[in-house]
Image (cartoon, rainbow, N blue to C red; front, side):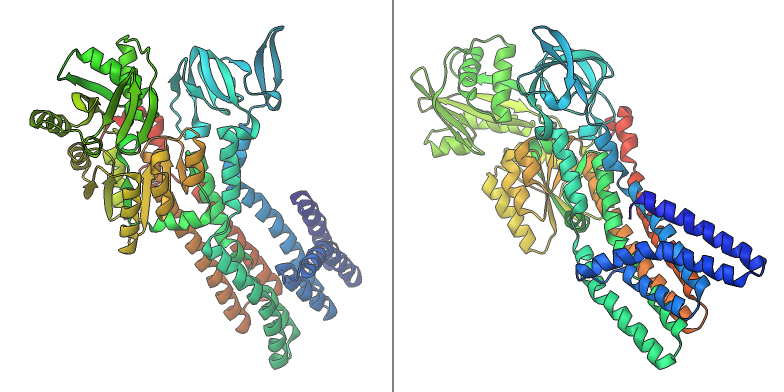
Length: 630
């Protein structure tokens, strides 16, 4: 039965009930009974069909209980009760469907933002094509007010782009040549030409929709328990109804018991909350991969942060180039030629600085070897380079002179990451790189503490001086520095063994092992990196830490909402059963209360759709001025 059928059936049977009232007023008893039976059969037919289908699947459904009760009511001549119960059940099902749709409105809103067409630049001119016809390598043109139909890189033009569909951020982002853009986002002002890189189901936007759909279909431990409980509970109610009749010899009491004990509200109490909560997250750029993850996130009491890109902006700059022999620009040029082979953000920072100084990077590195967490080695123009931290220097047997070590420590205590540059076994210079703490970091950490997170640590591969400086500024409980990816995994395991429920927050591929080991792994600021979207339990599409605080608050609110619904559903059934035993609740009135309880459970869950937490995440994101605090 779909929503339209339920609506039509409810209208027909409702009209028949009104007709029966008129016939009752005219004292036409036989005609009234005929109309009531007709109303019962119209609605009861569809209920019985659904009950039969469930039985074929070896499942005892609520429809089966109602069907048995209605047949019994007809046999004993309770036509009014039978007609009222079937009408209320059908009308209630219609209202349930309408209300349940609201809990999925967030996903529907996302799907509605899917781009339909794109303007492709072809030899014969600019032509509009359906978005699904785009292929990798196409060049598309997007103007103000238009949606971007594919993921790609801007090759000309500049624009401000509303990326709320991806990141949850309402403030438009300024983008220009070289920046990446995402399908489903909208040009607020300007125009751009984009080289298409990913289309259709491969786009970040399509993956978000897929993740949310999968998450809303997944079940929590509570849901799984309720499903198992319902499978036992429902047939037990049939048996108990028979026993009620055996001991009371009262058919109406037994039928009323059958209807009142329906577990309708209980069965939907958990999933309806989870669907609404996961939908809220999706609207705010927080992808939570299922109800079980939601429950784990709500219980987290210790958070581990990566530093660069998580607590800091992840856009470091070179603050000093110290050359102990030769010219500093020449040292920077040589180091940049090596780091061209590295994808690490610090290596790319060195390359970027060299290009900004217009230094020619002519030679290509050979035999490049990336040592995770330490640096890299390579041969350029016949010289062997070792570039990285002091651990790498020691591992390579390269001595650090006392004055060099003293200078490096001084730079680290000033908040810099010190990178040694050694050529042919001798240190030639030091490059200092610094990053800035995110403006919202202190506020988000304070919010997490207020929400019940007991401890927060930093795990970083950076040097201990810089790490401690950031940790002290943010008021973290502990800082563990100079760690390799496997060291982070060890810390996660150790803290879990101590009984903590651990969440790990990182920004990319290097943190993937620790994210996978934690109770809940959160990847942030991914912008659609496939590996982090697959590894993490929660994906924060923006690099704003407010989203993490919101995700934690939302998880606690969702689990709380689910418990409220469960207790309410169980309490309603208990009170109704007591009413039945005391002779205060009858078949039709019991069905009415039962349907109202189902709707109240759904409406309680709908509140989660607009949940913003105590501090209102949306308000912070819409008003950038508020982000300057902390």
